[in-house]
Image (cartoon, rainbow, N blue to C red):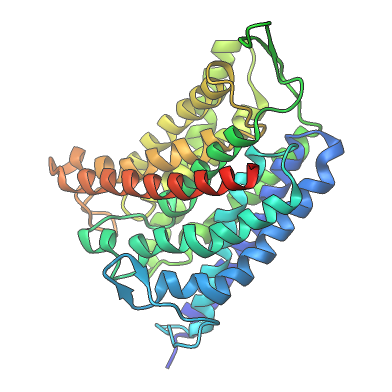
Length: 382
């Protein structure tokens, strides 16, 4: 017999995660120019539609099928096998399907306003079929090699946000900056960085509120007990709140006035940062995660724009890549043995093992993602 409560909660969580697609679409549309709004909304719609189909046909089996050496799941085309737990197999499938859609859509904003629609459609299929499922297999399949070693990523700081953020960085480099973003001298050296303002901060803020709301399902739907769910909800509130306040104060002191768009990104950065350890941290750990995320998102966004001259219109690299890495490391540093996950963080126990395996996971997932996505973007560009 299936648990009715578990089934309903997982399906509700899936609906909340799906609603996050609207949040991503609103953030990206608000942070870019009005003339590109239709293109951005269509890309967000299609990467979920195409990604879901591809994941259903092939990606799910590669991710959750019987593990072959801890590297890849055995293909299960059109999901013929039963993956039931305390809820029906179909509930598990749809929950994983909406997660895949989230991973695919992260890169959209970083490549906004200069990506061919056909190329983006192919990208959505590739990441949903071969990038997200394989790294997800390592992390979340019980037979995955990282999972076997004790790597911990509760809801996707690594498997979703870091993968999506790294893809966003590679994509932004490959497609180049928007026309007028950087002014160069006769030797090609950048002499001026121009701000290209988004057309609607309120629309971007609405997207952030939707994402924060959906994140309670994103982090909480896999909870196995009431106490675990309560801890997850608390941490999912504290980290983004602290990150937003930190960025508000930081930009106010730095620029003599608060930066609205940075504060919007900061709440998302805090959410990304706490996603890996939402069930492994206590409230103090979530506070530290948010504090670091609040500084990190500003410093990374400004560094890649002003120093590296990589055009990322929505700050996806600073939000997802930087804070996906930070959130994964934070588990190794800040995990409290008394939290529901029961992990031993370095600062609480002096045990280095969890930090070591978290770092190994970051390096290997980044290496695999970078290799395949660089190859893909190179072929498409040619």
